[in-house]
Length: 404
Image 1 (tube, rainbow, N blue to C red):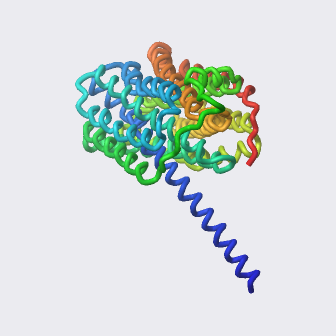
Image 2: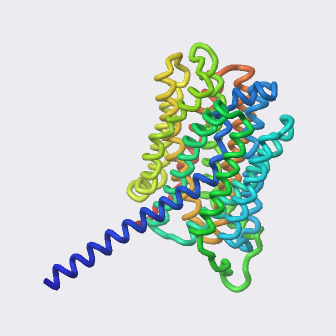
Image 3: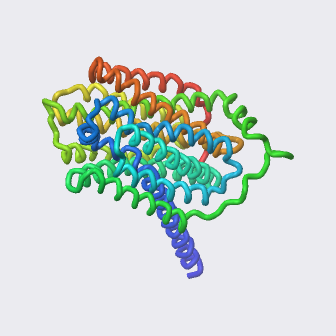
């Protein structure tokens, strides 16, 4: 009887532990969702914004993705001052402040103002994103950290899907202004969630003796060849992702596909498989190592590129789904690698990675916009494929394998 009771107690404890882990990962994923829900939601209404501001697809594509400029700068600033920033307060203030430029987008009078507000959105999104990654890296270790990072990126995936669907529906039925006001409320909801779910962390201790200066920390990270490879991979991943999912909108709304704005929003159900596959990245790294997991993600994404050139909607949707699954899987692998491989100041390492990652998105939107306008969709796909090949080559430099 005692043995049975003891067994029941252990079983209950195990179930309780699993329930706590699932609940924790749900909160982590929801925090990510509310942090970056604004990032790609506007891509679903790009054609409507082009008509509203009377500009070219390349100009509007750059304006919409200008948030990546703010994100790159913010990532560098957090990397520079990370040891002085209280994680909880920094995330909370960033999400609350994000609601301001989001609401102001509803009344932006011209493309210049719209672009500046998107940059400001990027500053606050990236500061919350970077500090959350640092918080997760400092709070968890081993398999728990891998699961937490995968949950965070899964929330990012969900924001791509739900954000685009919501944005398309709101803009189609209630207009562009209402769309941005609703997203501002989502930003405030993120701040409320952080207030109740993230606990304050103690200041980062010095390494040994006096704390290293921020520039010293940067030099430590930038001399690490594995980190440099990871930074380059991050650049290529968002270059490919933004290049694909910004300009495919114009392909979908033009003949022969000719989708309506609401249909265009529903197209982004292609991200649904990524919600289920991205959490597997942590397990894949644990089982096969970082390099194999990264190559697997890039191979899946590359397999989808030829399908994007088809004139059949089903083929294009399958291609978009494969690109989404592959790039999100690769992003989760790279993000977890950089934070877990850092031996000092994870926030600085995450900030440098995200600066490179978002700079890749900015370059992708600018360069591929010009390629799309001047040479067409096929040339754009070739450039995207080249960026994936570069990422695959850089993956050779990721040699760390983590234990459970």
